[in-house]
Length: 101
Image 1 (spheres, rainbow, N blue to C red):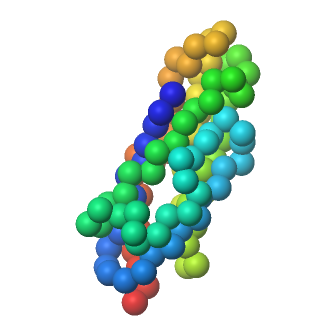
Image 2 (image 1 turned 90 degrees about the vertical axis):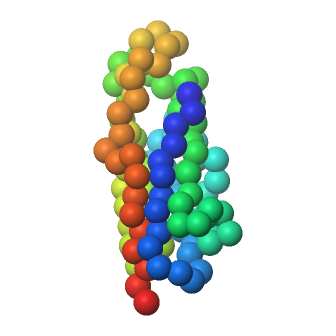
């Protein structure tokens, strides 16, 4: 199941972010985001929930997005019944990244 989080940056200049997860079922499309990935001031971080790596019931995980000075954690909860993903909840739908100038 494909999901996404919108990252909005304020300010100009070079941006470099890393994306990490603490569970194998959250699979980000890329793990390094730079200024070149942004269209204007926005980037859609796509990730996949890998149903093959889920267990029955509730599955929890975190995706962490970091720069040199900031760190955001997105908590993700996935309800799985059999092989079917029922719901995906995340603590944030968008992130607002502020550059320190």
